[in-house]
Image (tube, rainbow, N blue to C red):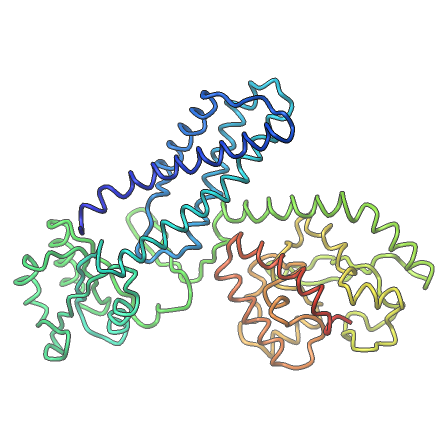
Length: 457
């Protein structure tokens, strides 16, 4: 079942995708017809949706679920494909509709498609992993060159049976008598034809001439070759490659938001979220809070403070003023029962409403909804000297909320351990960003604001 499954799986996946999309379209049509008497959907519309989805899904190769691909990547593919679908339907269908709610129907289809197709694709992904755990849809693999790194890789093959990689053993000249070692490197070429190989993993430390010989053999036999980087490149990062003509280099510190499509997704999320807050909340909150601030103390409504943003660039961060004007706002953090904090300021800080004007920073592009919290310039200068890799948190835009904040590291920084923990969570967020992580952090932020306000003062 090793090869036949690979041949038929893409067709089964695409057909399942089309069926689930049709179900989602039907559910949307029924709901619109029942609640707002939307015109009946004809078969031509189904044809448009299914044809475009077929072209998009096959063209983007959504059916390709890699052996080491995690569920998050499968979910990430879906909204990108749906954006293509909605774009095409807006051009070829919505523009021809006389009914004024055509665009809202399209949005309804997008929402149901995210739910139905998301469940379907996650289910397929998990079912495929379970199928491989049972020893099916496997690939035969060997490793050339036994070292500390390649030994760890062989252990991963054993532990992660869901990868579906059947490890047959090592070939190595220096250690050809240990367990799992089938023989020396020359012996590989004598036995390879009988192993029914699919994958050859080659240690980077081997002689370049031998590696070329292996690659030539693999090309002739249609076997995939993968090079195992040495220990210096086994970092907790996602490696990628750049091509300069015929020359390749390894990018060792790429992050998800280096990808233009990912940045576009995050920016669209920021714009939609911040515009919603501006129109429905800040439009009445700013005048109301402004009057309360003015009634209690003299001074401006907003507290404007320079902070470090992306690439350490300085920007003006907005907050509702919560203190009486003082000369220590930039250098001294607010503490519990701080005498500088006004009564209305205490309420704003306790509920985190003082941060609400930062949605204006998001709108103009200085900040994001989710990201590392920005610190004042003096605090930044201090922490750079105290915390290793502190500056790495400035690779992306700072956020109104962040992973560190929903993990409990919110408010005053009382000791070095707290800022080190913040940096660790910020680094994890930067290295592993997904749009789903942003949504999850936003939801958890609301929960934190309701149930945990101990450090907000």
